[in-house]
Image 1: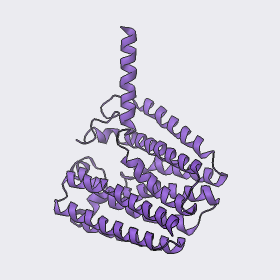
Image 2 (image 1 turned 60 degrees about the vertical axis):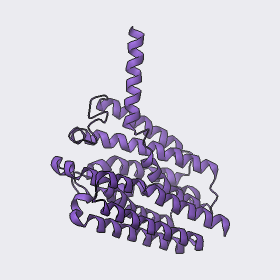
Image 3 (image 1 turned 90 degrees about the horizontal axis):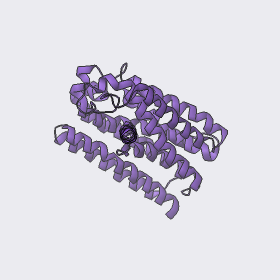
Image 4 (image 1 turned 90 degrees about the vertical axis):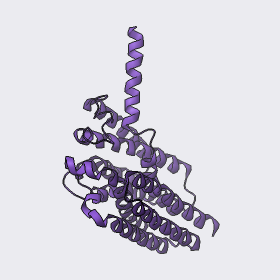
Length: 296
């Protein structure tokens, strides 16, 4: 019986850890990975080294998972008061803060082990990535623009990817970094629309609350600025017609997403679908980069 209880407890803890790092919800990893791959493919001329691909794919998974842990540690009291998040492992007591800290430490060490395979400059940049991931969850307490900080955290991988190949940072990865900030403002504002009423009640700030009735216009403007940076990227990196055509299609699709969310009255279901559709936006941009560099 003791052995059975031990296995049951172990299994429940593993299930709770899987929930903690959102193991079954990898859209966050994809949104972190995509701008990183934009940068990696451009700096590699469309054909990155397999080692770099593996490092940044695994690194994105580990760092996004670590970010989820930090977020849940910081938000555990808020999460218990919000309908969508009250079943998270720290909010409902399945895991302790100490256990979550251990998970965060292990994930961070594994990610750092991957970075050690890269050059010294990229290793130094990884320290910034860890700081951004650790501080982001606290921003929503003091600013209505945590989405900007999320964009910085998610966009830093593009800077690291470029540095891993070139050993330096150029204008191109900085343009991707800026584009990703605006992209995060767009998609994470839609995500925040799901929790506006609960966030107001518990005192959490977001762009969705800040922009109020103008939220859909603000998201559309964020997309336009994002694609302005991406067009500048195309010019700076010498990308051709395939990239620019694909980017234009992605822009039109992004504006369609905003229109559809607005048409549905900004309902939680429409907002979440709009958020998820950004995966197609990012994938189309990546496909345009890969095709442009390999077919022209």
